[in-house]
Image (tube, rainbow, N blue to C red; front, top):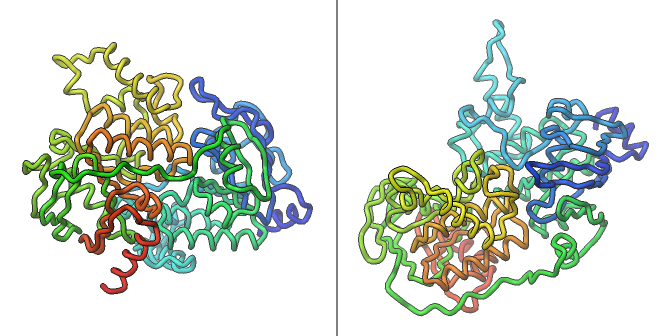
Length: 508
């Protein structure tokens, strides 16, 4: 800890105090006189539903946004932060929910931006930059990320790790982490928790948001709960059911819904020996009304399978059949015409057009169907989009509001709503509950079961083995781009899914 931070910690002044903070966006009150405080030597959780104001509070603390009203105190000093640089001057570093890395630059260039080693003429020494970044990654226990790789060429989880390393390497007195584990696999999440505990034990302050209760109680020493932009209490200890009630204002069944029994039928989606950049002879079927889960250890070809089916990755051989007919799928347009829809994991960069309105994002896939001679009937557009917004309970003041202004859970609902309007026969759902709150998760679970009840074929990947075990009629386990095991319900549990993946890994 810096001398200043140590002095403040010794004086027992809070690291951060947010007092009656308010912030609005286009008529939506993201925060309304919300308050909380966090001290040095603690990991403090901010929890609540999507749209409760957690991310907005983190952005205000990190200098990304300015509050409309209220007072912010850092280390006992009233602070008006107009940029992240001003937050840095107070010893704050932030890992925002929206990654801030530059995709066209390398890992090392992002890690050492504005701190690159330079040669005699003041030019950046690229070899020295790579060496320094490699040493920095190794020092923090990261050995699987190439510092010379471009950010755009590494996985979302690896990008999140790079963002975290960049923040931790600055030795902050106060570290703000906004849903940092939403894209991490278990190994990387445990790596992060180890560093959070190390910072806590060194007398630093860590403020952390997550929708995963096991993470919150496993690493956090204090919890503040937000609902509808207001703080509803801070606790040293609270059980999950009580926390959910405070977050939502109502009791929510935390158990998974049970899918209806599936009657065998001819496949709606089928692949035969599908092979691609990572895939190896993948053959699978999904019948109408069937929910087929896809699981296994991270990085085993799940993403490539979904993106190849949707035409975003190229197959080198094999067949894709929809309704028994072979389809030639070169791109997503072909997939949509064949009756498929994909909800990807990274809704912000792969699914939504953030500056555009909710209604424009909702109607994107059906424009050719509802437009006439290039003219979009606005009345019909309003009718269709308002119906979806109401059905999915999307929290937005107006369908003309930019989708980027919505919370993560509401953005996910808009993306799912787009495909509900398109009425495909096959839904490809890739980690659709990542980064959403418990209430929204339950709504998505019910929606998945509704799709099956409407006789849609659902192929469903999740990084959560509990979801796969409870929501799927069958679970396909992948290893190195191939399907290596198939598990059946009823009677399937999360341990069965994990055990199958681990056994296959140990045998391979």
